[in-house]
Image (tube, rainbow, N blue to C red):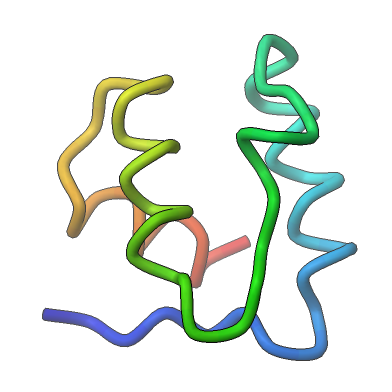
Length: 61
């Protein structure tokens, strides 16, 4: 499984995510260090993609 690379750039990534999926809320995009799996799970539920697809998408932003 791919590693999620969010540290340091989350605010920029979050802006791009919101542009792609306007219905995501601040709560959906809450990132806390060590809780990446929780974030990925929330995004999976909202956008209907697999875990690997979500991780790849976020890493490509």
